[in-house]
Image 1: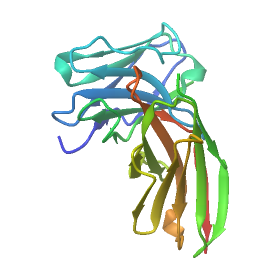
Image 2 (image 1 turned 45 degrees about the vertical axis):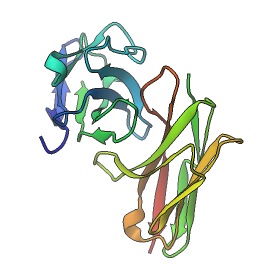
Image 3 (image 1 turned 90 degrees about the vertical axis):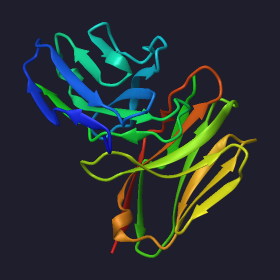
Length: 114
Length: 113
């Protein structure tokens, strides 16, 4: 597609529920990244996918967080048993080469846990 | 891993004045330094970047300088306009094993008319 698409744009969920956030990267981009941005804060790295390599999960804050990328394209970030501190904007980015150059961000999913 | 520090956290300037935002990084192997602008409620967008083999790069009113010895880089915006008001993030990536950008904490720039 023309840009990085994320869905839903907004999600309100009850504490303890599971949520799935979707990212559709730019066609042909081999690298895909998930970041979290809490209100008024910077961008916290969560996970990185590059081609068929094993993902870099070093930024995931707990085992309630997981992500997968099917067919080297669409990615889903899953948060299980959501907590109020999970409330944030979850941003996805893709880049052509995985070398950090040419990051294009999606518009994000604003997650609110009530 | 890489650590990027960004200052100041907030910056207010009068329209037409210059604004300077500074970042330092910790990994001497870092070799790519982009700057992103994020308007309220919108996605971060790349505005300028610099590689480690270059000391300065300009694009109209925006410039970035890099001092590899001191491990710091700066964003300079001249002749600021109200539409420059946004949060600006610096970032870096290492040529080592980490393959994701590490971001600074952001600077809220306000240009006063």
